[in-house]
Amino acid sequence: MSRSSTAGLLNWVEVDGAAIRANLAAFRRRIDPGVALGAVVKSNAYGHGMRDVAALAAAGGAEWLCVNHVDEAVALREQGHPCPILVMGYTALEALESLVQHGLRPVVYHLETLRRLDALAVAAGRTVPVHLKVETGTHRQGVPEADVLEFAAFVREAQGLTLDGVCTHFADIEDTTDHSYAEQQIGRFARIAESLSGAGMRPPMRHAACSAAALLFTRTHLDLARIGISLYGLWPSKETYVSCLDRGKPALELRPALTWKTRIAQIRDVPAGSFVGYGRTYRTTRSSRIAVLPVGYHEGYDRSLSGVAHVLVEGRRAPICGRVCMNMCMIDVTDIAAVRLEDEVVLLGSQGDERISAEQMAAWSGTISYEVVSRIHPSLPRVVVGAEPSGSTAT
Image (cartoon, rainbow, N blue to C red):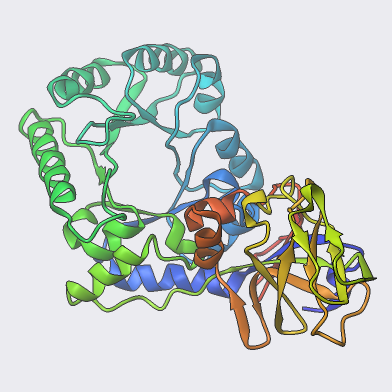
């Protein structure tokens, strides 16, 4: 894209719209025909920008959008998305009225929620389609198996509710190549779904598949596959990638969609033996050129990257020197002669022949790629490149 579109910005995220659509298309080819695709755009679309990613996903054929809380869902409704929007996180009782008004589909696991929803729906003259989340082994949200029929019967008898779906989530499908526990969860979920069918309460939507499950287990596709981290071009884990190959399934060509950029705010010559940054954790061993970047842990560039990470300048790696500060960090550009004030610097992504991946940054920080991308501060502008969604603007 042209420099003018980011003129004046010191920190921004570029989102490759073509990559988002290509990843969605890859999953469309992988999952069974007739299975709905749900694009998980919660938490600001894992740091990529919820509004733009939702528009890209909808244009690319995602039939559902999946969020964490009701405010995200309302924002998507106000953006003009008419598709089913699944609210997967807990909705406070006082926020349920907004959920009813905007025609949203909540994931529920409390009778108190169902009672309040029913009353609100009847008062509004509406019917709310609910999705029961059932406990299969994660022990977070979920209705115990022994109580599922009671919950479903309540929904059946309620005047303002309809049982639209039953769902679950996996506890250990990404972090291992031994999927025996996931297999147990698949079996429990199938048993619960069968018990609902046997009682005449089979919902139209059964869903369990996250990105990893969709890649590894065809039988988890069911009626809806919820694609999260891999929509953004990231593998859930290296174990998922290895398991895919071990199971004889072709590895999808996922395209990372995010590039995080900043600019050089200062360049200075520092004598040998000088300390750089807080705590005197870094000391130059030669006459050095140190560049200051206007990005720090407030913006989401984690303090744990101090002294271990690299960034890309002029297509070359430059190490972080000293501690990452709240709003800035320092890099050594001594061996990169062409560096100038306000040159673009890539914190995450590609420049020239070099690439810093989310997985590599996660390894430096001792975390996972999910956290790396989703913690980029939502105030930083997201700029779509490659394939801009209709009506999209930088956010």
